[in-house]
Image 1 (spheres, rainbow, N blue to C red):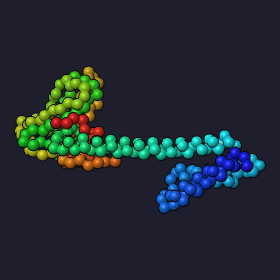
Image 2 (cartoon, rainbow, N blue to C red):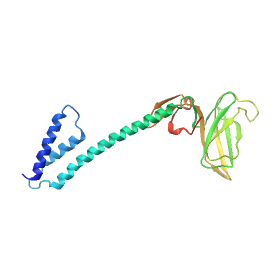
Image 3 (cartoon, rainbow, N blue to C red):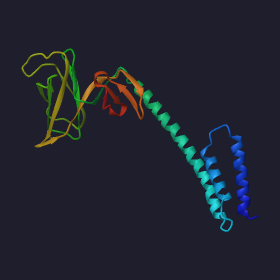
Image 4 (cartoon, one colour):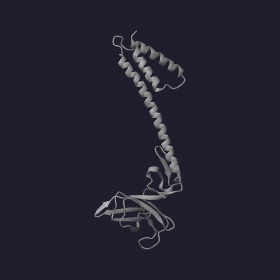
Length: 221
């Protein structure tokens, strides 16, 4: 009996032993791989048997499969830990106000706070506030603004000088640098009411602003 046949016999015995000891559990990937290799060796062509190099190569794959499984387990534990950490971090935001993408503006007690994000500094920026019917009620000229996240406050006074009713409004942004228009992102201010774990990130309930992801928060107050 040559070395390949001896190796096949030893592997077959080891596989049978593993199957018997684990007969009440789900067969793991290593056992399946080993069984396939043994079956291949049992059904090999006697006139053209597997050589030692090929057997060694396939046996080495068992270690590779084991290593990959262990790596996957470790990664799953790591990702789970990161998600738990993010959820705990997000829970600390409950009761705080935050700026998130959106153009909603809430006027309460003659004060409304909104925000915007600029990719670069601009020398002219104006905010147009609209009522629930989409009619412009006030234009705020804010002049030059720096890049990044900025905020603005509306005192509830309309362009006609009257006091607007408390409630829900929206706004648009017009930003310019020289003669060129600069795209600005509108940001709404809301309060974090609760936090729940999401598929990839913590999900924050921000009342009228809806559900937002932790990554969507631009600024916290």
